[in-house]
Length: 202
Image 1 (spheres, helix red, strand yellow):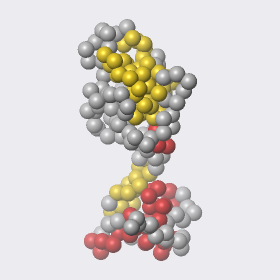
Image 2: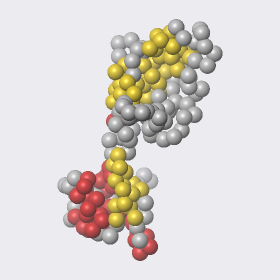
Image 3: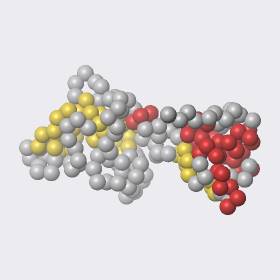
């Protein structure tokens, strides 16, 4: 079973760090097989809203976008994604951002975003897919964010990516731990921390 640590702590939050939490779960019979970051390191990526999309004057498969990232003026960004359109909110890597290294990177160095020229048009950043942020292998287009996403907010905060994914190796007698709340109930018994009941809408 896999679950985010932050979700578990919404129901039971003992005053211990992640390593101690994993040790407590393992000693309680719920072996933590893996604890890994929810996302690789990257910085300088914020929520951007695409205001306008125009065809690139010198390339059929590229678009020139005006993107609001909460600054004084929108950015002009050249984009080749097939699903780009006005109105959507997407991750926008600003100039100076550092993205996870590409899979074929020889040295594993971060990919740094600079002001570039694409077919004669200046691009002041980069609109990102989930694959470019190493959040999934999907490279079918831009990662479209929720309409309620706050323009200019760091994407790591917006998507709660500074989290740890726990993989539990459960034995057949622990069927009651096949839910986040079930694991939280066991954690409360092990740690003595209070168990918070979920509030269900009526």
